[in-house]
Amino acid sequence: MKTIAIVGAGAGLGMSIAKKFGQNCFRVALIARNEDKLKQLVIELEQLGIEAAPFQADILNKEEIERAFAAVKEKYGFIDVLEYSPTPGFNTVAPTLDVTEENALYQFQFNVLGALSSVRQVLPEMLAKQSGALLFTTGGAAIHPVPTMGNVGIAVSGLRNYIFNLNSELADKGVYAGHLSIVWMQPNSGVQDKIADIWYDMYTKRDRVEEFITEDRV
Image (cartoon, rainbow, N blue to C red; front, side):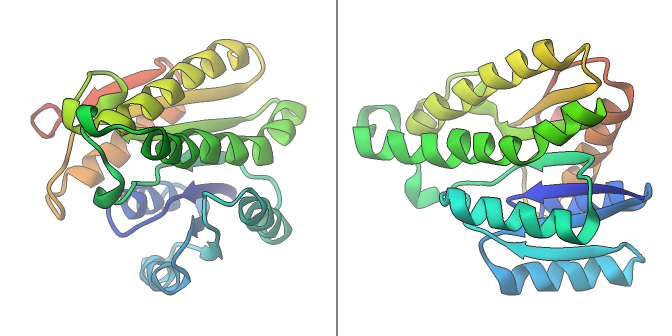
């Protein structure tokens, strides 16, 4: 079986991705800050016959990320897919005219540095094996400026640049990098499952670097 590590795993899109890959012969490593919620997600996946395990880490803490991935590797071995999709709390989002050095730095650490730390835990092995995939899920501000998401847009648009460069640099090395940019979804709308289907299609076909998704375009 293959292994997918989902960073920022939650009950919404992260869970949908876990189910989709789990139903296609993947074991699921769930990485997030809240260990109790992770354990509940694992129970739900196991009830569906999907092998899963929780790994606690705060993505703002590089050392915790390193420890979490070390634990994933110890349990499952090679990580075939990394999916990075943490969501910042609404209280950390600042509109354009309220962007400060501090709240911009926070979003950069949360969205970009957390992604870099996660990639560094899996990419060397992927390159050695010439196999693997790096999947990044962000909000719509990564592509289209959204004034109400001023500090987030600065960070995720930079992350998008990194993803495109990864896709280009890794194309001939057996490793795929892709990006899904999603406009706000209503909770429990069912859209998350459709997005998970798109992610699995992008992962298997590797024919495009990016999709931009709104609820009426899924």
